[in-house]
Image 1 (tube, rainbow, N blue to C red):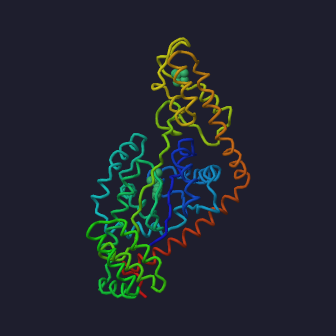
Image 2 (spheres, rainbow, N blue to C red):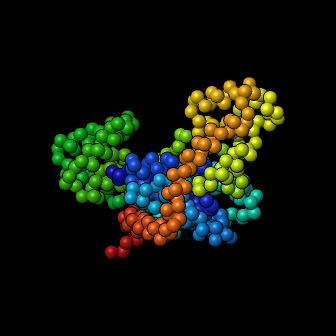
Image 3 (cartoon, helix red, strand yellow):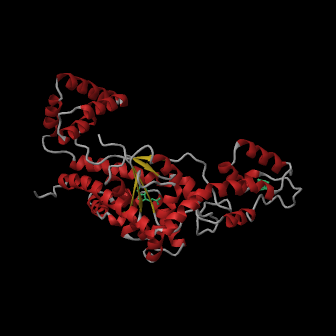
Length: 402
Ligand code: TRP
Ligand code: SF4
């Protein structure tokens, strides 16, 4: 079996805000301690929509890396790289495109909505490249055989598509001639005891769909010492059915944290001007929150309010403990507290969360070469991993001409 590997990317189209931190980066920081992780700047994905504005992408790439590092992404644990610096992603995207039905891309639920949304911003994305956006994303994931992909809810359909593409690839190209015979020969090479156990587990999985048996059989194969890599791959593939598993089907990893909304209660985004940026100065954070709209029904201090109609309440959900939340609910609905008073704990919590981030960011801002070197290093590591997969992919597709 291939080892656990986490991969995720972000489009460099602007600087990072609290929404990115709570929605993704905090989770990445946690994951880097548990699994080998790869995190990258999806600059080609950004170009599919911002091809008229490449300067933004170039600038955002470096800002974005500084923000990631400032949040605690540790380059000794996670590999950080730029998509376009590993051009093998483009090769795999193209190879996958040959057998990806057009209808699969046209039917991705986000496609039509996104075309319209971008048109509202004056961007024409009725292009070949934009239709292929989720396919390029599939290549990003499959090229590292990543099995865990932390993404937002809106990206789940892209992971689903990635799984289908991997399955189709393995089905089309993982069937070598005489697979069954070769797999049977590999089973015998395990020795009689292990071979018997392997067969029992395989039958249990195939006939009863017993996933426990699947895992056990995979572990059994993993532990066998004297088998070639090719034979091991055959044995993994043979448990589940037809062929070798060349590409790995990934799972989405969703964050459970409550969603952080912008200052106006809408989705936080820099362009909507409702965001708190990760490197924002404390005074600016304080001002922005003090100016936030509250429950529109609370005109005078003596009017009771309803937190459910107030965007400040959403911030309390994310930043306050149970006691503070009780205090808000009580105070607001009885007009016991004023809105500025209610906002103060949020201001304090955000500023103390951002303090170490600002400090770490300053170190990287002072030393741009440090960031360049980290990324250079990451691109090389990513490229080596990508080559491992591409070698198998080219061979399976009949392209190695040895
Ligand atoms: N489409 C993702 C987004 O908009 C970014 C992305 C590109 C990505 N390639 C990826 C995320 C691969 C996870 C894995 O957020
Ligand atoms: Fe919103 Fe707090 Fe004012 Fe209530 S007291 S309206 S929750 S800011």
